[in-house]
Image 1 (cartoon, rainbow, N blue to C red):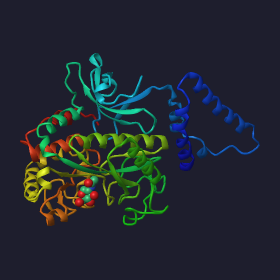
Image 2: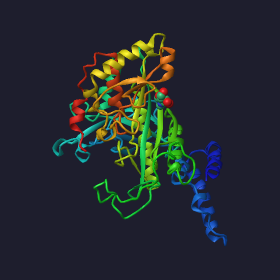
Image 3: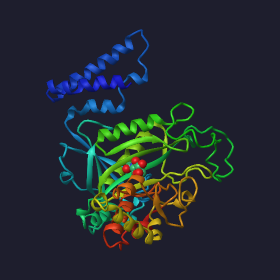
Image 4: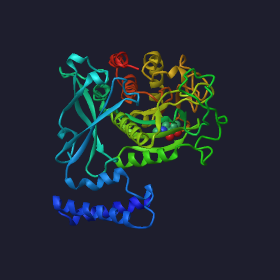
Length: 432
Ligand SMILES: *[C@@H]1O[C@H](CO)[C@@H](O)[C@H](O)[C@H]1NC(C)=O
């Protein structure tokens, strides 16, 4: 299928180069397609398999001769930035904008997303970050938005607005982030690859979840093979789309629990980390939607001796990366320790089910940092210790964090006064 698509894609630029983009040329290219389709029907040979036909996405790219740009405006709904409440709608523009500032303000009905009362429900969409739309291809774009109320204030779920203000106070610190997003794929109510069964698992009270158990963890991490790796095609397609979109995604790997995967974002500077992570999650949701799979960002999707899912966040500033940086890192760990309780509330809903002190985690109630310690809250990589400079890894964030919140909290604590309470409004507003 890839070879077929590759060949067709190669043809595309030539076609648009010699055909003027007038309606008549459109017609002729369409009638060509129709003709070959008719020829296929008339042929006594079997029709090509589904896989040999252009995908809906490619068919959409073919239609780009209309010269318009479809902008997919994306925002975060009332359940917050946990990864499973992206909302989006399409706006047709006459041409592709060169920057977000050229994009028009738009609006939506906040009472339908749990973000506004019915009486006064209009919320504005302020474009904040854009990239190529790899699903539709061509000149189409994805647009991540901030959500603004009629009095021109960001609504509590619009955490980007708050995070941006925090980062803008000290850009000279040059904060870098690398985030490891773990997630679990489900199909028909079962984690991918898990045996189906009508038995209700004894430790899951929900009658909706019925499955048997695979063998214990061990063979699944970074595994290769039909009996140990489940859902790779989804992850591969997701990676491809992220790269096509120009997102700073650095890799993918299979995780410890069967059906669990990870992708990495970064290094990104400041607010970019949240922008790229949200956009990459949005694309993952779309790939899964097209493939009949559900992605869960729950921090502990299966109770018991099965690894949870986190969002380990690597962090450094210019000073931490320079000679003598280790001291800056140790100071930062002390500051983060003092704020542990305040931060952990915002490090993902249900994180207490994951941070139990087992399965490569530290307990949620006690903060500790250490060199190369997977059981620590914050791990200092061995080579950072050896070189006396580098970065640290905050292992506490759950897979369902809002990355704007976590990256900005770390920055506020390590580089500013550490006094922000700005995300409390967010915490209080989200509806689970
Ligand atoms: C984060 O740090 C860990 C530990 O050094 C490293 O293994 C991992 O590749 C880093 N991930 C990202 C996304 O930067």
